[in-house]
Picture: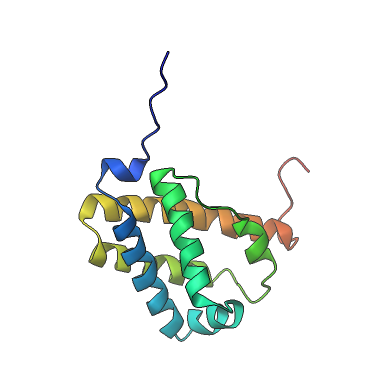
Length: 138
């Protein structure tokens, strides 16, 4: 029996690699200039070209199921004590506004849905790793 290739949710709403690149590059261009987020990111990222390529791989893996991303976002963020809870709503707001500007509505909605899920997961994981809330089952 022949297996059909898996189609990522992004392909179903018109997301392609060019759209991912446009979203990632536009968004992080804005992050770098943001008075609150900019200092955190600019201090953490040594090579923006490399970081943007990694983020494009991440979103390609999330939305198109390409499997290109290799990394551990939780571990990378946990090493940064300057990332605080109040950064997440600001990051999400800027991400959502960017998606609604650079993507057609169905694609923007998917970017927003996934970004909220990822943001919640990261915020929760960081809180656990910092001992702010106990891990599940303890």
